[in-house]
Image 1 (tube, rainbow, N blue to C red):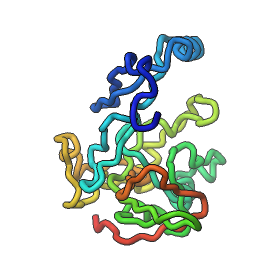
Image 2: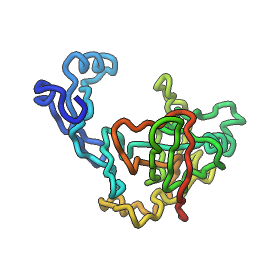
Image 3: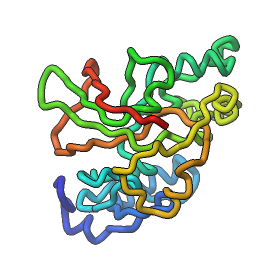
Length: 231
């Protein structure tokens, strides 16, 4: 059941899952799932699901909420704009070559339009309003430093032979990964050390600042930008 372990059987299979430099408690989904995945991948693996009683939060969590986090690398939401994707494909030459990246290469949860290219890199406090339900409050926390995952075809899992990190550098998408925000606690030495480092980025990592189970963000909702970062 949401809010805890569904059964004593799964509770007995609780294990610690490593996520980069962080760790979280998960629940083993059993031998049948492990066999299927191991056969498919050609290596011994176990399938783990999030323990909803776990208290893991993002390394730069908003002090008023501490939204629960599953097995994401660090943040629950990633926001990117269609204008940024189009501009990246244009500046990088991928549009001319006919090998454009799709939004699924960058894996955002939230895709917006109606803003200039790369404008989302400065979004701080946001309000999402839909036709039904209460408004949702979001906060941009960290620009998303990119790795080699966008070089993999999201449909087939095969490498595409591109170098997205280098293409982002050529497209001038290199900036400090951490916006300056004194309200947010940089809890770890690692987070403090990267505050001013300039890295290839695409998209803004976010979290809900009024997190409540059941709140919904839907296609067609309007995002109002209440404040912006200056750096």
